[in-house]
Amino acid sequence: MPEADGTLAGQHHLANVVLDGEPLTRLSPILESYRAQAVADLAAESQFALVEAKHAGRHAGPYTLHLSIQQGRLVFDVRGAHGADTLALVALAAGPFRRLIKDYQILVDSHMKAVEEGREARIQAIDMGRRGLHNEGAQLLIERLDGKVSIDFPTARRLFTLVCVLHQRI
Image (cartoon, rainbow, N blue to C red):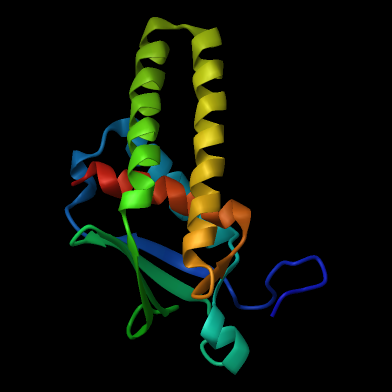
């Protein structure tokens, strides 16, 4: 249930996020660090609630989210905190995210090159661009999940990071 400040109260959060699919061993070190940080941040602080569950008062969380890409769709398999039973399965077309994901990968590659070259000003500019992409991706996630899952902006930003990481494994 939303609080006066618009946040979600109580148990409406992610206890864990699992990226389903191929093993993560194929990730670059920088993408692996982004993945690990996003998962840790989501477990520490997130606002995530099934819309139907909020209204019915059932399955208020915390949740375990299994995130995957299946048949060109981004799949949110929302389970109870212990990850046993699926409470909701939300599939979103991946198409609207493709440009953002491609741009994100370009920025990650540019960031790695700038770090290797020791170009501090370039690193800062790339980080600004990456923040902008995260904001755009987060807003798109919020819009696409509307009516199914309620998330706040910081949670959406972290989930967008995981969507980009997941896409890199395909």
